Image 1 (cartoon, helix red, strand yellow):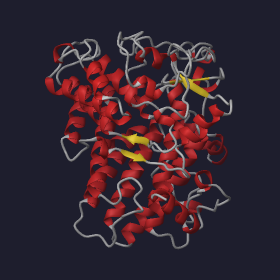
Image 2 (cartoon, one colour):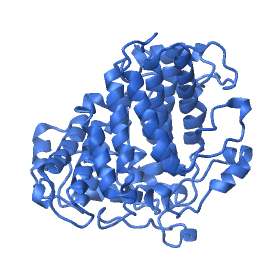
Image 3 (spheres, helix red, strand yellow):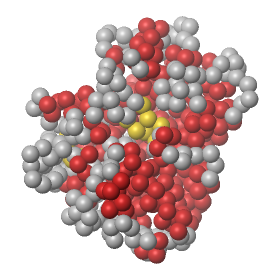
Length: 484
C-alpha cells in the first residue's frame, strides 16, 4: 500500500468534514457542520484529494470548451450550452475549501503555522479555479455553517486583487516560520511534508494569477509574474503539484473514461483542434507526445472529432494513454506551466504583442524548457524530443518566436487541466493565436456566434441561495471582469 491508500483509508474512519465515498467506496457521508475532534493530519489529505477531484470534474467540461476534448453527444459544454459542473462546485466548496478553512482555523488554535500555510495554498488554488469558472463566488462569508446559509459572493476583482495574493503571501510567511507545534509528514499526499515545495507552489500560483490579468495591463501582469517566478519556484518536474494514484485509488481519467471505453461506453474523445495541432496538419510538425496522449488503436491516422459533431474520431483516451493510466498522477500545477508563464511574461515584458515576432533569449529559453518539461513528464524519448525541438516550425529561435507558438505549446502541456480554458478566454478565442480554432458545429444559437465565457451556477446553489445567485449570474457569452 502506498501513502495515499494508507492515509485516506484511515481518514475515512475519523474525519467528520469530508466524504470519502466517491474515492474509496462505501456510505461514509456525514453532516459537514457536525465537527468533533478532527486532527490536522486528517484534514490535510482530504483537502488534497478533494482538490484533485475538483480539477477532474472541472476539466471534464472545460476541456471541451477549450477544444482539447469533444463529446460523443452533441449537447452541453461541447456546443456551448449552459453547463454547471455541480460535482466540481461540491468538491471545491463542500470538501476542498471547507477542509482547508477548518485546517487553517485549527492550525492557528494549535500554533501550527506550517499547517496554516498549506491550508492557505490549498484555499488559493481552489478559489482561483472557482472564480475562473463562475467569476463571482462565495469566500469571505462562506464556511460558517448554520451561522450563514446564504453567503454573499465576492466580486472577481476582489478575489484577484486582494484575497488570492494575500492568501499566498500569508501562506509563504507561515510556511517559513521557524517554529510550529506540528508539521505535516506522510499526511501530505503531495510533498510528504516538504515545506519548501509548498512555498514553490505558492509562488507559481502567484505567477499564474498575475499573468491572468493581461487584459488589465499586460506590462504589469508580465512583470508581476516574472517577479513571482524569480522567488523560490519550480525548477524541475519533481516540483509538480499533483496527486499520484495507486491500484486501489485510481486516476479518475482511468476509472471514469478509460475503463468506460473498455466496456463500450464512450463519453468524450480528443477534439480535432487538438489532434490537428499535433499531427502536422496545422503546424507542419508531428508531435511525439500525440501517441502518448491519444490512442488510435488499429486506425492508420490520428483524427480528432469536430466539436459539436459527435462523430469522426479515430482516437480515444484509453487506458493505454498516459493521462488515463491507472496510477499516473493528476497534475494541477506544473513546472511546465511555470515555464510557459515565464515565456509569455518575458515575451510581453520585452514589448511583444499578439502580432509581434521576436523576443528575448530568456523568453525563448523558457518556451523550450516548457516543451522539454512536458515531454520528459510523458516519457518522450530523447531522440524524438530533440527532433521536435530542433524542427524549424518549433525551434524558431528567439528572433522568430511568437505568442501563438508559446500559447499553443502551453495549451498542449495543460491537457486536461482546467487552466487551459483560461488562456483561450484571455485571448478571446483568437484563431490567429490558436490556428484553426472555430466555433463548434451545432453551436448554441442563443450565443449569436459568440464563444462561451463561463459556467452557470449549480441548481443546488440556486435553490439554497437564490437571491445571491440571481444577482451574480451573467450571460454565458459575457466576458468576466478578468478578461475585459
